[in-house]
Amino acid sequence: MSQYGFYFDKEKCVGCRACEVACQVWNDAVQTVKWRNVSCLARGTYPELTGVNASLACMHCAESPCKKACPRTAISKNEDTGAVTVDQSRCVGCMLCLWACPFGAPQLGAKGRMEKCTFCEERPVGKIKRACEEICPQQAIVSGRIEDLILHSKQVAAERLSWDKRIEVILGHEEE
Amino acid sequence: MDKFTYFWSLIIVAGTIFLIGAYKNVFLKIYYIVWVNRRLQEENGAMEPVVTIPELSTVISEAVLQNRIKNRSTFLWSRHSLIFFGFMALFFFDCVYTVFGHYLHHYLHYDYFVNGPGRAFLKFCMELSGAVLLLGLTAGLIHRIIFAEQERTLIDVKLIILLWVVTLSGFLTEALRLANEPNDPFIAYSFIGGNLAPVLQNMHLAGSEAATAVWIFHATVTVAFFAYIPFSKFVHIIVAPIGRSITQNGSYGQMKRERIAGGLL
View 1 (cartoon, rainbow over the protein chains, first blue to last red):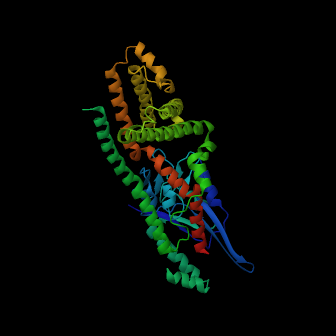
View 2: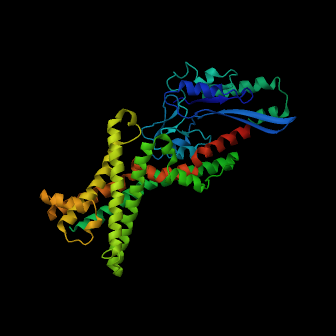
View 3: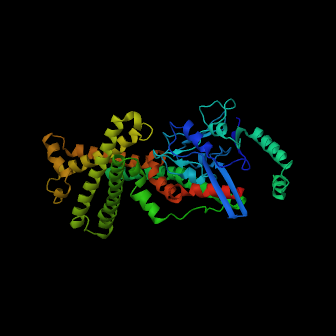
């Protein structure tokens, strides 16, 4: 089984929320709440102001806590892609998956059942980009096999180190 | 075998099945979630509490008033409320009747709920809550059948039919008992069973054998229903109030997302 997932680059994200919109438009038939959420956080006061935009959705964890937490076995993992999806016909909307999820990804939909990112299951994986990834003007979201994403993150880090000499960047990448 | 011996044997078997299901599908799940969140705190410094203490307003809104269902549809909320309050009230009065009407009477000769006004009160309340439950279930069943396409993923028709049979057989049991005990001083308080009894008598369906058979059938399906709760969608009776109250109407997820964004700062 291949494990696919998302890579998110906080340095590239500008908080435009295009990913949220693309996700809603593509999954319009089944989505009643936001599956992808962009959190824009700022700390401090000018001129010592720091901010970050984080676009978060289900990370399709290899060992999915939501799947193990579901009392109705409504959450399953796709054997080919590793995508974690909710079977609405089995879900009772108890929100235990939300309690278990480290990313707070599953949301209670308008029909009283849990909803979450399906990894755009209608889009052939590996051939077409996910809706959020496709729309992102900054290429801050990248989807792919976990092994490829790890390689991609190292390339991005190496590239950044060539021009960004801030100590926290260097230390941050050293820690990784 | 005495019918009460049969009933209590069933209770022991069904109770064991219920406890196994509750352990597997409720207790272990919650234990795992607490373990995951504790590990997140220890390893990643997650700031949100492992278990949030639900705000009273959330519990009332989610578990009692069920406002989320009301926001979806008033009709859906009405029938769910009828089922919820009918079921809860019937279960409560049944427990009171079992404890006070059977055990305290048997062991301590406490008569208030057997011969006194307590029996009239309980009979009336049980009939009323049963009627409310049956009304909600019937509305749900009809709606489910008419709007089958739209509701297929939301309501499991087999479960509604099971609870509907449990409730209806309860009324039949009471009616057949009253048909065989027409001088029951509290017959007026069983306002459905009491009115159904003469109808069954006129149809020559009210023999004591029929009463025993229906009593056994009602006891069996009721006990089967309780055993089935943790393995079916009925498990939401237990887990939905817990999950929805602890995740504070979804704001627990927001807390987690903000923690992750904060960690990226």
